[in-house]
Amino acid sequence: MPYRRLPNTDSARIRALRSAVEKAVDTDFQKLSFSTGILEEARGVLTHFEHLSTRYKQLYETQVKAGKSFAGKMRNARMYISHFIQILYMCVMRSEIKEEQLALYGLKEYNLIVPDLTSNEQLLEWGEKIINGEHQRTSQGGVPIYNPSIAKVNVMFTLFKEGYQTQKLHQKATVRILEEVAAYREKVDRIILQIWEEVEKYNIDLPLEERLTKNREYGIVYYYRKGEIVE
Image (cartoon, rainbow, N blue to C red; front, side):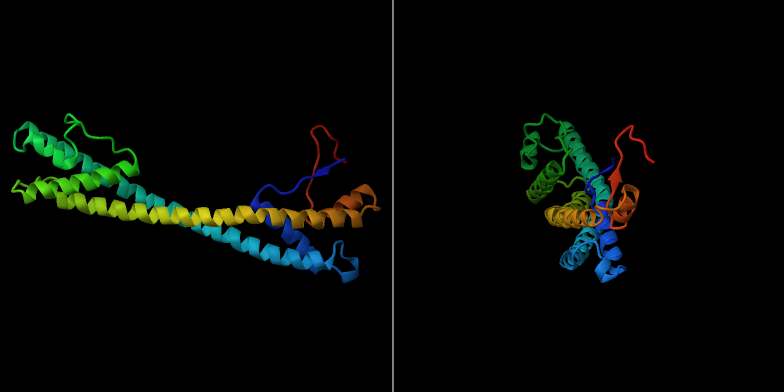
């Protein structure tokens, strides 16, 4: 005997609801397998859930697209900041810049080692420190570092920072709509279960195969257990 199972994906939930609603619309009122009250509620739930699902897909696709652009900005910022620090260290080793001035950049205790720039947060922290440190040193009469210049570093860092903030906004919007979708699933599943219960009860006296066929017309999905013979 096959068993039914509620949909476990949002697209399957939408298909199940749409099947039931469309079948009901095309069925004579007196032959409808579930109540008109549930039908009206199902219409509203289907419309709202489709809207939520579509909105989530749109926001997620926007986030992914923006993420690809942001990844390039992140790589550029990391490369320029890392390269600037290496040039700074070379200037110190050549005695062109005093070692104690590394404190202006927050690098005094790093023993001429480039700090970890792996995460976005580390990149934000060190970008600010390096740019501020170079401005402080040059404002005290120090010769600016070139190739890369701090102006170029600042351009790349600013693009990264703006991209990072934009990506956070995209992520926040996506998470918010996903939470709405998740919260609404309980209502969707409740409506689907009500429809299925009423449809199966309505067709209970029909022969098995005819009953299953009629039930499937309303979106009910049946599964056969492993090894079970399908006639």
